Length: 279
Image 1 (tube, rainbow, N blue to C red):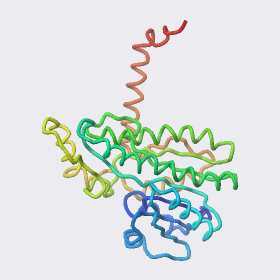
Image 2: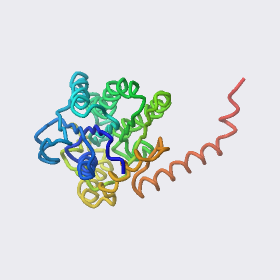
Image 3: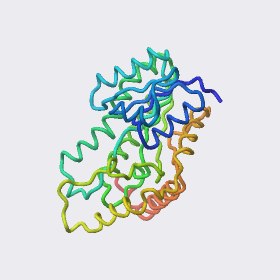
Image 4: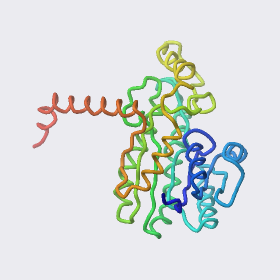
């Protein structure tokens, strides 16, 4: 395996990001890992070593992002792979969530990712190579999750601009893969990673029940193994023809197929209306 590539991973102090960083280091890769809190990152992933550069990163601050990328390049000479993994979950009906709560989720999950892309692309263009992973969610492909509307919207946004980015970056030898994980056994569903509305509306009992199921039943029992997810990402980089869309987890595969079938059915049922709208 080619372990000479330099990886830059955001949101590396927990979840899939942490599993990926640990696996990369175990396999001899050089890794630049970032988190909002350096102590949480080093407590989870270990102290700085010859192959490991942990850094503080504020995704809402482009100077912070530019400095992290520059520090990584100064240390290791280049960056080959960027994994935009940082983000957080937000539950609540669309009516319950305030403008501020919704925008805060977009600031990290969407604009934070865009900020990293904007700052790393000059480097990738100059070296005429690179690979960008944008971690979305199966909820960014099929949004039928009551109480997860804003979160799903952020991930739909990530998937959408990833398709455009792939077309824009291809002439420069840069690959883009948008990843749609299903449920993986990380702390994503814990209270520290999954926020709920400040002002809840009693009428939305179904949303409250779904929140409770996620935090009390699904959390800790997810079928997805984050170690295997990390292995999959490493394998994709080594592939000569990496995919633009990568679904991870049997549940993600099933939900994606269900969505495709639903859209195909709607297309056929409403074909006459669809095609008879021209001059």
